[in-house]
Image 1 (tube, rainbow, N blue to C red):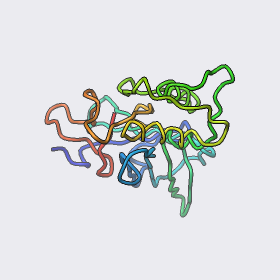
Image 2 (cartoon, helix red, strand yellow):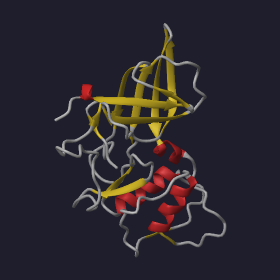
Image 3 (tube, helix red, strand yellow):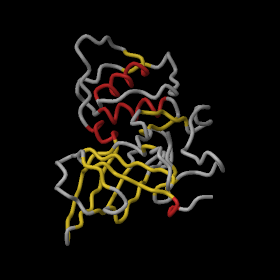
Image 4 (cartoon, rainbow, N blue to C red):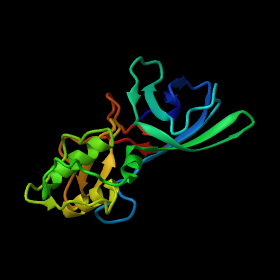
Length: 212
């Protein structure tokens, strides 16, 4: 099994790419649920301390990548946005969240949408409003519907309701897509973690396995 030292990282922050020479530390936390149960909308958190060449923009986009040392191919670990930052002695520490953060806005479907709406269509509408898409592995019960939200709850709350109805939880994959994973049962057959090609061991970033 390869060690963390056998891997290389690079992180794009606000359009500027930083390599191992400017990254001091980094960690990625991704969980299936915030609390045991169903109806959760888990948000992955990426933190990094580095030496910036210029101040990243407010809510700047952050993209970490990984590869085996000496290899050419880089594998993306997700898409994040800066939420907090601090700086001392030329070093900056940023705390970033994945696309689930964009679901904190009020859900406002188009006036052209018809209700009751199937949960699958509602999830797709929310994903589009978040600037992403549903993972093709999501499975929905076509008989389940939602009523017009009337601007009474956020998109994240709506996703939580849909997840609870299906006995599962939402997360954002490394590709940036929304994936509904059933808690009672198993992950979709094609769901997988990043693994090494030769040994099949899990690739981690700061000890965390990455779901794609």
